Amino acid sequence: MLRRFGQLAVLLALAGVQVPVAALAAVMLLVSFALGMVFLFPPQVRMVRRLAQLHRRLVGRWTGMAIEPPYLPAPPPPVPQADGMYRSDRTLYKTPRVPAWSERWKWMLADPATWRDEAWLVLDPLVKVALVPLFLVMPERGMRVYALWADLLLGVTAASRLAGQVTHLRRTRNLAADSQAAEMRRIERDLHDGTQARLVAIGMTLGAVEQLVDTDPNAAKALLAKARDASSETLTELRRVIRGIHPPVLAERGLSDAVRALAIDSPLQVTVDVDMPHRPDAPVEAAVYFAVSELLSNAARHGDARTATVDISAGGGALRVTVTDDGMGGADPSKGSGLAGIEQRLAAFDGVLALHSPPGGPTTVTMELPRVLPEYWAGEPDLPRWKSALVIGLWATAWCPTFPQGLVAGVLKVAGYDGDPSWFLALRMPEPLQWPTILGMTALGVIMHVMAVRIPASHNRDHWVGRLFPGPIC
Image (cartoon, rainbow, N blue to C red; front, side, top):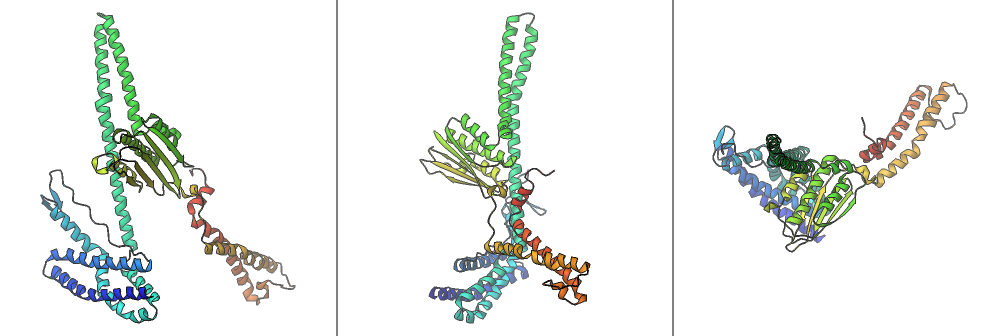
């Protein structure tokens, strides 16, 4: 109790800080737009946001009600044009400083959360003063009421959450496009520098054979043997390029066998453990396969490792991959070890990569791709107790209004039954109300049956769809 009173005292003390901050913010806002000193607007917004974030953090720590920041995602840094200049509206700049400042200014101005923070800064001290009696009489309830008030103005909204998701999708789309473009450039380079050069050499060798076949048959035979060896090497390179695009074993046997094939071809002693009852989608398999291939290659080439372990597991619709090697450690994504490329490849599926590589080893890389597996593969999650009790109650009572009080009473009414109405409610009603009662009871029973089926079905839609339609739906 004393701790709660101390927390409330801190809130009231912050109200004393908010009053001068609100006055200063009002002056800065007025000067920014009335006198054209727009450079004061971003510092004013940052000042208010820091104070609002302090309240979010304190309320979340003291009440357990996490209040997410509602701000729209910050704009990306400006990108230079082909001529090296930076564009802001219709103006070009040599450095990105002015375009970046302009974009951040527009971002703060257009963000609705900015003005919600301003309104909160003005109203919050008044709300705290109004809640003082509740703070003194029922401090727990008072803190809860204040947390609801803070969440109302400082919490995330549907629009800000949607904007954040759109920005994230745009970023992952760009990463996926960049990764695909890099793969295409790599394939073109491999074909141009390797396969194409060898094919040109084979054509020139065959041209020399045509000239020597009549005059020097032995030299022509030697050149033919050389062309045969070159064609074999070209075929090997083509197979290597094809495996770099999409390995045949991955398409035919799935991720588990493809990773085991990687382990066999690797110079390391690799142990593979796969616990995945079903195959994920082909793009997911390809992303995980090339990520594991890159990690094993890094361990052998840069980490001086001898053994490695690959663990692939599925749980709750997520795919988790852990690669551990006994190398020297010290892996750093910023040193061009290929980890940055793996992160870009996983980002297309909202995947994350966690790296633990202390100097001296071992190195452990954990990759997790959420919601890439159908949830019904992981089993049906249990219903909450109150939902289970509601479904049991619906099934136990829905038969009564549907059949005895509804359909059976309707049949007796049509048949002109004049005997004892027994416990049929509709037949005990006055004549004008009998049919409405029969129809109402029938409708009530049907609704109860529908709810009894709908509640568990909507609790885990993918599980039910997977059971109803286990195969592909055409």
